[in-house]
Image 1 (cartoon, protein in one colour):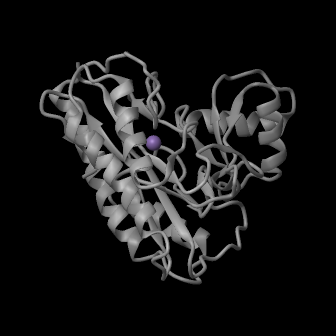
Image 2 (tube, rainbow, N blue to C red):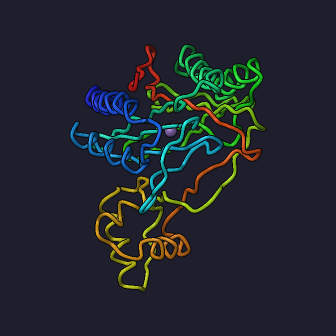
Length: 297
Ligand code: MN
């Protein structure tokens, strides 16, 4: 079980996240550079005493997740973009994970956005110690289908542990008929992804997000230096290739490719809905107790 002190740290991370999330809404505008938005948000997180537990994801339209600002990214937001903003913020390893969807000067997808939000709220209402994964998935699937949409079946929520953004438990976005019961004291991020398409994503394009899984010995000197830096800077949590470039490293993508091949890193490329249909999402982090605590609300 979590101690009072640990719960306080989870709440503190959540409080920082809420402030950064509100601030982000003022930056999502037509013609805004994605890299500038993200740099401003990263600065805000630091000012408030938090750290990134993963790169801030800004994923557009049919990209469901795992997109972020790349090295020398020149992309701007356009009128009509369906933007998903996803934050992972930690205080001393205690993580808050939350995000939302918003359209740039448009209302074409307001039903889709509302559906993801309602699905999340419906799950939060019934969370209690011992709730089954099946029940969580069923509620999300039902809300999606009742509105004529599909849940994304190969994306899921997840439990969180100290310095572990994705710990052991995955919570489905559809009814998997799993009778696994979530134990009391589990910290869980629920994140329904809803689409007008088929409800499946696959990897699209180059990864900008990586995570260290093992410190495999490497021979090339500058790759070894980058590996050491990753180990001491990110505590096994996901990071952006851009951060290494900004820390002054050269040939970052070559080094990361090498580290992925050697089995030291995992890469997380952007995930696109297979029929290229728009995707909306919403996410909160909840500590499952008799009286659940939504740390990010
Ligand atoms: Mn999450």
